[in-house]
Length: 342
Ligand code: SF4
Image (cartoon, rainbow, N blue to C red; front, side, top):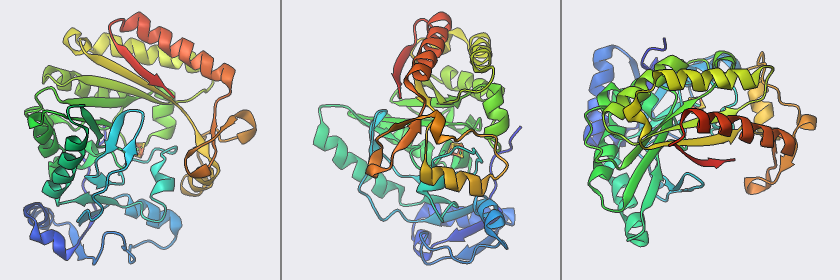
């Protein structure tokens, strides 16, 4: 069982202490006896300990930086939402395939932003622009925010903030089961709480440092009991020897453990494994022993963002994934909605 995250080292931007959350976190970490250092900017942590890249990367992943979010222009977040809402960046998990390794580059440490009200104000402008259309905000584009929220409660505030809005919806996804503090949040049905799930082989070999499948399902049941709309993202769907049986077992476990009230308003998203050439280099550097198959010649090249092509499964394999996993969902969760396969 993965314990709730406790940073080994904390950096605080002096300006973060102008905000109540900044001061609260400073006190919390002092009381916990965690080493606290000052940093002028969350973008420039230069003196992280560690003698080589391998060590530095691992220390960074257990370092928390308490800072201010200066850019309040939100990125778009298709296909799951209109905008990415930035409460945190980085993650303590060690998923070998994680895209954050490339997008965070030399800054794999975890950042939490304390100017939460300013982030809400920016969200309000986006909502007003689109009203009366609903605007969906995705809170987990650059982090697994649930993994750090037992310390900050920022997500809890966001859930309650969106619970009061007329045109806003919040969504996020997690691989962590530490959800107890979120059970009494006044969500008003406006937050879709999703869990990322995968078969045992993938969780075992590629998702160290995250909650196990059973823990995620147990947490999902609690979330459903608390009345949240619930969803599962099966990602990355990865073809390995025995994958059809592996995913069958995963859906069987889900079916056996998920209470009936959790199935009323249930969504599934399906995302196949993909990688880019830069991602492959970073993965092999950060996780040199990985079993993750990253052979371009076995994949189909697909045009990607910023002109960087990504390698996805070939058309036959994609069809097999859609048929197999789509079939399992229809069989075990006939009332659920499959939102997309990508
Ligand atoms: S839990 Fe999500 S964000 Fe964290 S390392 Fe794994 S894939 Fe990346």
